[in-house]
Image (cartoon, rainbow, N blue to C red; front, side, top):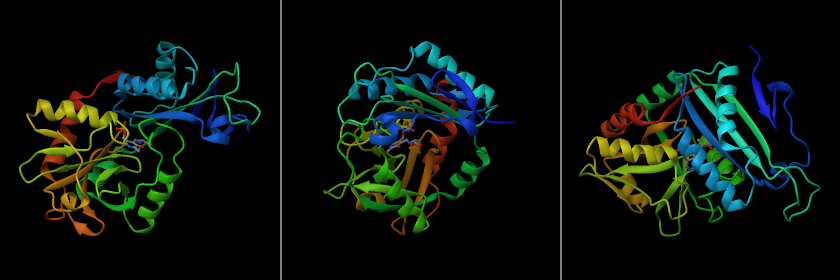
Length: 286
Ligand code: PDD
């Protein structure tokens, strides 16, 4: 079955889908995006993802490409047309097409692309059973990483370095030796006392939707959360460590820069959070 993409008002074959060569996303990374997990036929946490899209657009003064309600319908339709039962839906909004000039163009409509992709859920499940390795890299991104911009070159390079070193994620570490977040995920630890620790979202990280929903999950399970910076040394000595994102949910981290976290096996609290996530997360039928 051929894949279908939505591009600026039209459903087109994925292989033929294209944007203009002077799209500002292409020339300046002048655009934002969201990735929602699709699990068992439902789009997960769509409301929160669209709320964050609204914030990213507003911070960059990019117009909505269409009203939010019809966009929700298009998201569901792209998932449906691609028969995605498990996988993800990706949406990208750029400032639009204009002759190359740094300043914002006048009267140009923003561009919207939506794609959906099947992902075999057993891949991530197997990964969660084993746990992942992370490496660390110095923070070298701009200070507005709270905006989900398509300008991701430092993240690309960090994750490529992780891959070359046999790891699955790279954590950005700030000048004080504190862990910020991963190339495409938030970073967490569990202390010896069983407290969940993750960096406050005001300080140079993306406010992950999975992170927010995991707060709800933790509350429901009666777990204690501390939003505070944690150092790389604290992470290496922690009882558990994990990452969170729409595509990984809560994913155990078993080594950091080659040092085993605890006994080098996935932490039980992480796996409990992972298990409970879908009971709490918002599910929108596609
Ligand atoms: N990445 N931090 C960064 C830098 C991210 O790119 C992401 C998500 C997250 C986690 O956010 P959320 O829980 O809302 O997915 C944190 C997505 C999955 C991506 O770029 O593919």
